[in-house]
Image 1 (spheres, helix red, strand yellow):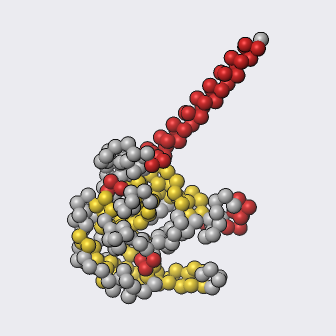
Image 2 (cartoon, rainbow, N blue to C red):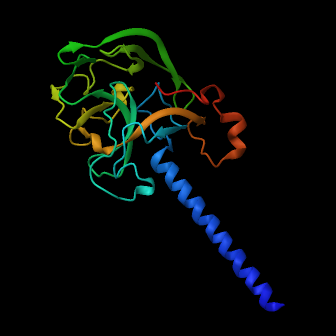
Image 3 (spheres, rainbow, N blue to C red):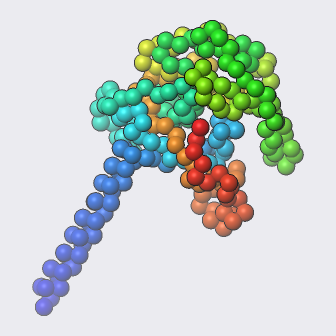
Length: 250
């Protein structure tokens, strides 16, 4: 009798371990081949993405490299089933400086493009990008005071539109030299133009190798007010941004 019970116990442990193994395998496969969740910790992509947004990134959009493998496990060099992103995509990539830190920015320059900022206006291949002044972007500072920033609707050469913020057209990143995007690289910029560390700063970000792409931002699945942590469930009823749930990223 005792022998039978021991066999049952051993069988139960084996089934549990098998279940855990399959669960980890499925999670690894989904995060590597399909979608991975990310959260937004900074305001560099305001107004498109806010601090406290949680979104899914599609891994299959640009193909697979060692940077798309789940949990940061290096597997191979190069890119499999690679696809070049489109200008205007919002994409997650590994910072070239360390190949570890996740950044999220908008694809502005493709290989061979010339990119320059002149008086706060984006120029692509020598031509100014159209921007239309729209309602101010209104937010609150840590003291609860209302803060307004100039907001524009920017139209990229291919016709894609997105909103940007320009606090001033005379900032340090509003006048730049011409950046010639090398082959196999991208020029990435944040939508919060005066508060974004991006490809305009070569020493910190610079040109981003296509291989460093993790995936394309697809849609928001959760959003909490700035300063509220995901684990603070008791604050969700007050700080959940219901209107942002399940919005596509554009």
